[in-house]
Image (cartoon, rainbow, N blue to C red; front, side, top):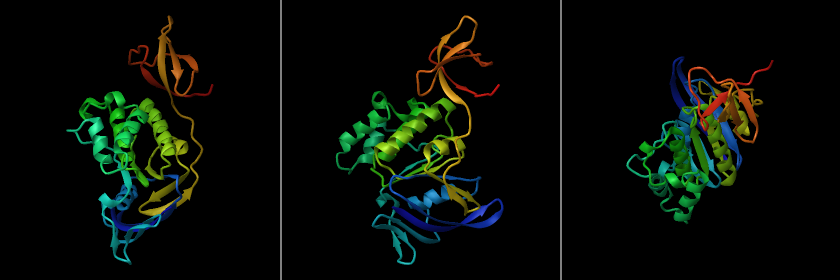
Length: 274
């Protein structure tokens, strides 16, 4: 159980406000946090990680106290058993993929086998000798997630980790994230602005606005939206034969304007009702 009540002064476009959030996360829960810019979402994650000092409250993880204002207890960030995945990946550019993971896993029991397991789970084994600059955005994000997991975190913090990726990559990595969450039995706090992503991944969602909790409850049903697909063939009519993500289903669709497609290319399909 991760149990916390945190307070912190915020400077927002609407003037001074106070972040005041009290929540408890059950073991194995994936909790999404959403809300407008300036609501305090990233600040909340930074307070939990110990990267910023709260103005008051407490953080308890199982039997361990990470922060307690009244008891004057403070566990520095490097001693908190958590992983943090940032929007900009924050990988070490001078290290290879394997070295990034090994650095994070240093001191963990079975560090070598753990790094090999994460490389395989994230489909990074062939990319292990490369440096981040030679990777795509989706590949870098998989490395960032694997590096966070290399610490065997009690709590995983994700700050809009997929927001900068194209739709097919985002959908694929949502499944990677869901698989990793289940495989490692994680407790996860995810910031997201994407209702579909929240519906796919989260057990509960917290809506923040100007530092205050407006709602806590189950996520709304997933809204209809684009589907990811891969071009299998170009038909004589110029239409595309596309395999939908997640299964063997094939469909033919008009080629979207403005680009020439080839077999193997990914694209997003908009669902419509006629």
